[in-house]
Image (cartoon, rainbow, N blue to C red; front, top):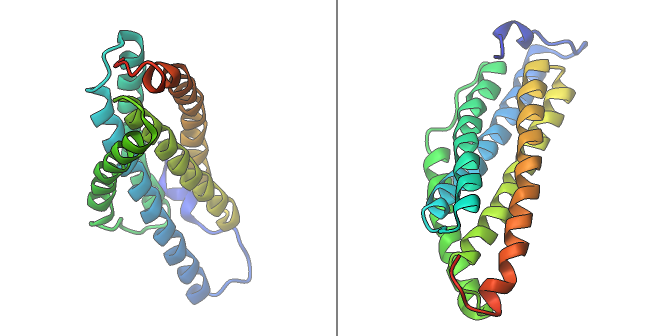
Length: 185
């Protein structure tokens, strides 16, 4: 758990105005992190319900639980810089998760894939996007000299990297079944 004591800047020769501007810019990026993670979590939760294959369903359900915890940990990024999250970003992220489902349906329609493969493919892409947002947050933490940001972002990026490999395996394994045989899984 992050403690607020690490918010003491370690950078030197920055005036208060410059420091606060940098923290405000980091906050704006953390809003993007919250948006991408909320979108991913919403899309993943909706996809779990569509999967019949028991092992894959279990893997995705476990990822959905992790995604929820990761979303909660985004608040620790804001706490590290003594800022508050945007109230609308989480809601926009959830809406974007639903929009990605519609995009997946369109791709499936034009590409001939059978459901729920297109949803799984969108989850794969969405996690990659969110993982990149956390990785950037880690770099911001390093640049600002705030270890609490680095610890949270690195931990989540590591978890998401593992999930990404599993998602890739699921997407590839089910692609031929969905596209060539038009079968549900």
